[in-house]
Image (cartoon, rainbow, N blue to C red; front, side):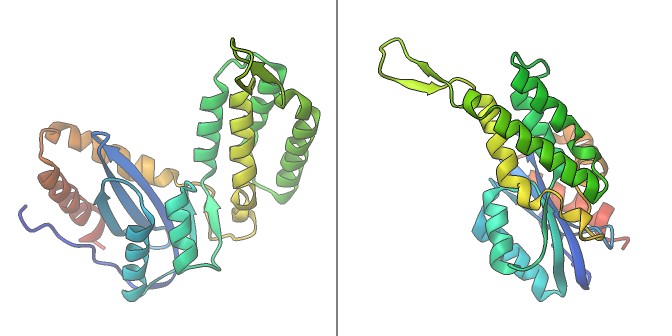
Length: 242
């Protein structure tokens, strides 16, 4: 355990990388670079947070080992996106639809109080069911109609008790709208690139969830020993047998 194994990438000149992280004790983040084509974790990093320099370093290390990214799927975090654009500016970068949907629905709540919120929630619930370009075009058309219909509604302001301060009344709706507008150019790339999945769900279901189940019985580990434990787990379960 004092000398944990290091990543052992396998050459893949057209790798589809699913990149995502999961938190431990709210202080450290395990970031995984999963090669969908080989069903293999090619790289990992245990760190305090996702940040651009570290991700650039990881992507360059993978590149040096012959793992060439032909497409990536991420949650759209700024640091991760910036790193991918730095190392691979021209490859398609799919935004994970499950992340977009989950966050949007959390902001909207299960029972929106306004008709605008209810309409947007229905639209978000359909997001992960889009399998054709025709459905994509229809979804975008309806979203654009929602934007137009409620444009003035979303501009409504609430004035503070002092009569000076103000804020937008429907902040959650505006947040979801901005979230979708920012993601929209990269939400449906999987329809144009058959090698791209539409989400990173395989990481959560097949890797992160089982890992956290095992980790619960070792939660008293120090940060250093925790990093070693995770390295050995990944090596034994997802690398050694490949």
